[in-house]
Length: 155
Image (cartoon, rainbow, N blue to C red; front, side, top):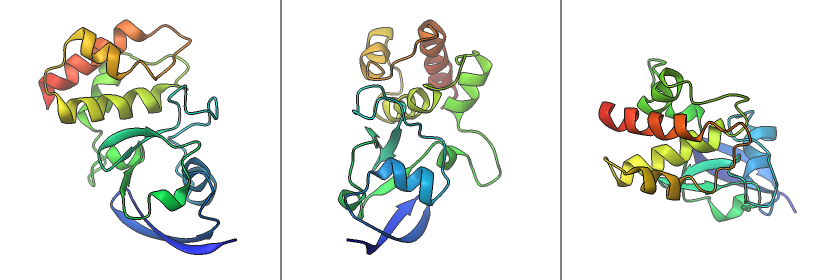
């Protein structure tokens, strides 16, 4: 059954008429056209659908939208400043060329932002542990670690 739901996404309030059990990813992509988060496995196991929920990186593909009505949600697009400047993590990923096909990129960037919010100087092991949920078939992992360290220096 559809309800009018209010969501706070990327610093703006949105009101949508949708079933509260609808996965957040579907709301972001299909209703609000925020296409940073990707549909990967659909089982919350690959990290392609990551978003920040109150600053924590969380998969959105199975998360009912009704469970995040009072949360601050940030997508990849929400990391961009009002002046159009990329977030330091996004800049570092570009600088270190830490993307190939780009499908995992959303999750890698979102998880990296969450990590650096908690830990300004993570070790390689801490980066690997935090980003373990983000599956990448292209093998850019060493570049991702380098990008996270570059971003840490710029924050």
